[in-house]
Amino acid sequence: MTPPPLHDPPRLAVFISGRGSNLIALWDAIQRGDLHAEIVLVISNRAEAQGLSWAMHQRIPALPLNPKLYPTGESYCSDLAQHLEHCGVDVICLAGYLRQLPPALVHDYAGRILNIHPALLPKHGGKGMYGLRVHQAVLAASEAETGPSVHLVTEHYDEGPVLAQERVAVMAGDTAEMLAARVLEAEHRLYPKAVGAFLRSL
Ligand code: GRF
Image 1 (cartoon, protein in one colour):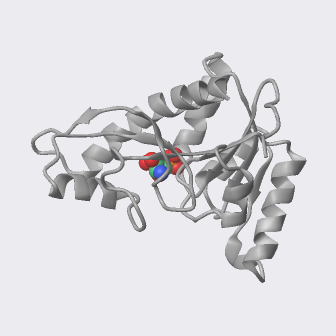
Image 2: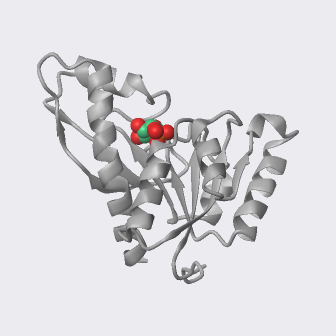
């Protein structure tokens, strides 16, 4: 089935679990006029996520939806789908979202879900590879470079086609924390650019 045409500006839902700095980077790019899109919905699986309160302050519709509070996976998925449909969401951007999306949702939005991962995929991705663990793995592998990847989401963790990457040098004496901070700066440049290019390609 051909997906429906995008709204103008395209309508994004951003899924978060914590800080939300990539959400803010997307929003800032929209405010500056660098990204032609609108964030119409923010979803967090954690009610206490900092990014969720930030979104509420900006008056962006923002919802805590915790899959664990639903009696079944199906009821969670259908609630999520209803919210996305109600907000007329064209594209979903995962930004530090630490839950796997329900397969039915990935199917319904196939080719329209993006994620940002803080390493050069296909290296250092997959189940359990999040947060500092990613940067620790980069250091343990003595990589000369690392950096964020933006990729399409499929039902397998971090395995969808890579759309964009930014290379960041690993320097002598780097700790995982130092690397995480340097890669995060690159993420904030890369994600808005990659989302913009992706929307123009649809
Ligand atoms: C980022 O490093 C992102 O690559 C990863 O999770 C982190 C989220 O950070 N998927 P934030 O919540 O956007 O600040």
